[in-house]
Amino acid sequence: MGAMYSWATPEYMLDHMSFPQIMMYYDYGMEHEENKSNILVGRIGVGLFGAKEQPKKERRVRGDGNQTPDRAAFREKYGSRIKRPEGGES
Image 1: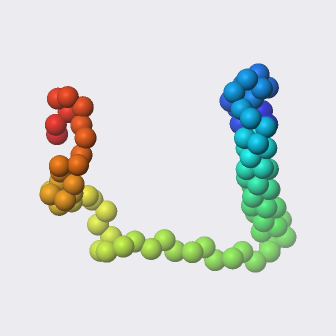
Image 2: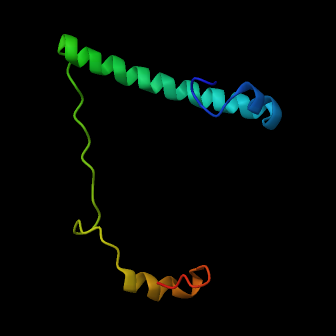
């Protein structure tokens, strides 16, 4: 576990985590490591053996591609629900 998660020291796991939590993090870590190894093997296959690479999917952008927020519309719709600290009005 310590190799997958730097915070997962044996002392921390014994003192602060239940056994099901430890197993959950272990399973997630193993799944992540398996995905990394599949990507690495695929890249090695392309680089060394000229294997065919699947085309990458294009990212779709909603609207006209302008991703700047409309602050006025946001404040009009959610203005009364926005919680700010004292003096944090902007």
